[in-house]
Image 1 (cartoon, rainbow, N blue to C red):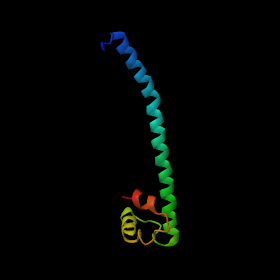
Image 2 (cartoon, helix red, strand yellow):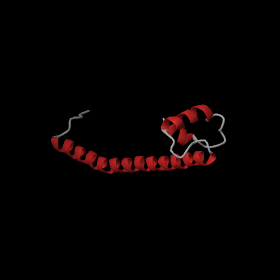
Image 3 (spheres, rainbow, N blue to C red):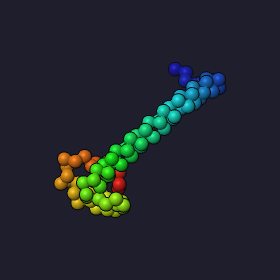
Length: 89
């Protein structure tokens, strides 16, 4: 079984790998950026809900949000506060 490649085969293989990377890297970037903006918008909605419910003030800090989540997260299980609590850490 002869597995030696010629120089031309090696260059062709490298070029194919580059073409794949030129397609895959932008797709991954768009996917990660999309998830970031999705989670950020859910975080904003949940923190606005906490402000409307009176748990947080208008100008809350991350420390206040973290303290709230550590204190009340298990008690308010019926409210979906996962993104607000874990995004703030």
